[in-house]
Amino acid sequence: MSFLENYQQKGELLKVYTYPHPVLSKKSLPVTNFDERLKKLAQDMLYTMYKAPGIGLAAPQIGENIRMFVIDVEFERKKISRPRIDNPELIEVSYHLSNFHPRVFINPKITRGPELVKCKEGCLSLPGVYEEVERAATVTVEYHDLDGNLCELSAEELLAICIQHENDHLDGVVIIDHLSFLKKNFHKKKLIKRQKLTAAQNGRYLDGNNECNDDDEDDEDENENAAAEGGGNERKI
Ligand code: CO
Image (cartoon, rainbow, N blue to C red):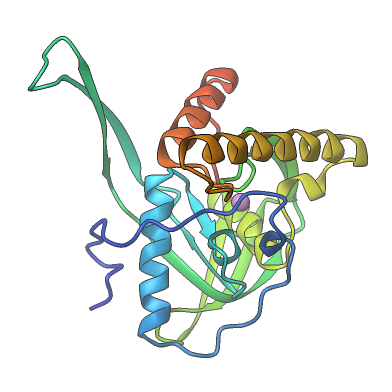
C-alpha cells in the first residue's frame, strides 16, 4: 500500500531554495525511474510542505530539477497554545494537522480550460510575496503516479490554480515572472536584499555558514505576517 493512503507525517525536512537561486529558473527533466528513491523524495517533499506550511511544493524548490510536484489543498492546521509544563507562565505553541489529502504529480501535462480567474498567490521560494496571477479556472492534467501509472485528473478552484503554479516551477517560472517588468524588479530587489540579510545573519550566528535558507521559525513568522496583512486567506504554494 502506498504511503499516500492513510497518510502519516513522516520524512526528512528538506531545504527549500529561495529566489533567485538558479535551480528555480531551470527547466526540469522528465522522471524516468519510478524507484524507491523517487518515493522517498516525494515523501520528504510532502513532509517539508506540511511543515512549512504550504499547500504545494515542486521538486526544483528543494533543489531537484525533475518534473514532480506534491499538493494538498485540503489539510487543516490547528494552532494549539498551552502553558509549558516546566514553566506554566510561558505559553507553548504547536500545530495539529489533520484531514490529509496528499497528491503526487509526475511528468504532468496540463490542458487549460477557457475561463480565466485571478487569485492572490504566495510561494515558499518567494517569502513575503503575495501577488495576483491570472490562471485558467479549470485544468485537466495527465500525469504519472509514483508507480509510473498514467493518470488523469480534472481540477477546478484552488486545486487547478495550485497545479498551474507548481507546473510553472517545472518550467523555471515563478509568480513574479507573471508580473509587469516594474513589479517583478521591485520584488526581485526585495528578495535579494532579504537573502543577503539572511546570509549575513547566518554568517554571524552560525559561524561562517553563508547558505541562504529560511528555517522553520522564519517561515512561520512570514506566514503569520502575511496572514495578518491579507486577512489570513493567503496560502503558500
Ligand atoms: Co511556488
